[in-house]
Image (cartoon, rainbow, N blue to C red; front, side, top):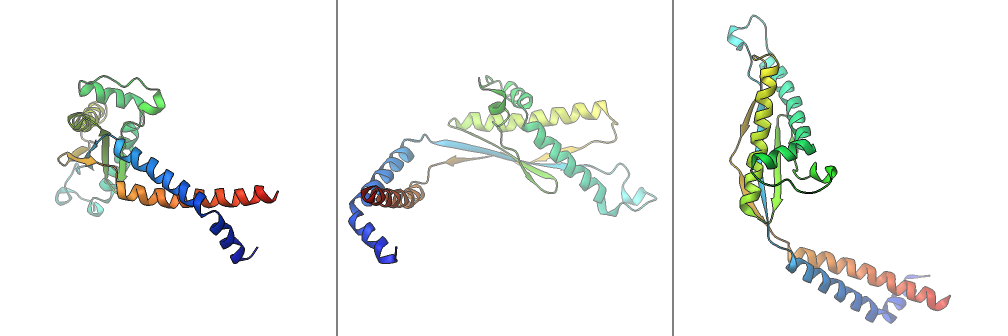
Length: 206
């Protein structure tokens, strides 16, 4: 088939293509408007490992805290792994004084969304329709990480410890972008319409 043959098929089926596109856009528009307003709460955590012996008091070169930064980076990976575990999620909800969600272990481990920012930082995010709940849980997650870091310091060498440095919690509205969703629906509707048009032509000739 040549290009003009495809154009003829599209011309004969423009009603189907337009109808499917309009229906898809209407459904997506209704879905977007019906979505409840949610809030994203986020906090940044930076890991720092102080040098036990300052450079000016050391008899060896410390490579501008290179090894401390490497250790902090690995510890940030550990914190990220902690936040991705169901046990930590349970501890966070309990720390915040909120009921633990009645979900399976896989979903419980995915409630918090830790994101690593190399070399020594991570971002903790939680989304909820309740603004206060989202902020409370994000703050509780940092508190749980700090508790575990303190406990680890007690169990290991007290001189080998990490400090967790945090910024203030940021809470922002998470709205559905109606315009963007409609553009995506337009493209998706046109694709579905074209598929339906060519399928109809194929069945007609079969």
